[in-house]
Image (cartoon, rainbow, N blue to C red):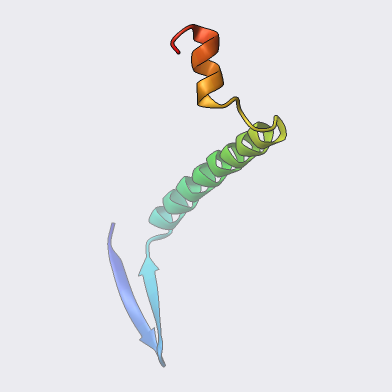
Length: 64
């Protein structure tokens, strides 16, 4: 990937090929979809309420 930086005033910009831009854009969309799934899973787990205490779990399994 060939990238060139460009400074206009105090701001810096990056110039890259359209092909590389679209590839990066597709990758960002894939990550965003995965992040939405992770957030949904966290909300489901939180809605279930708190888990059982470790000591209670050990008693149930006969380890305590």
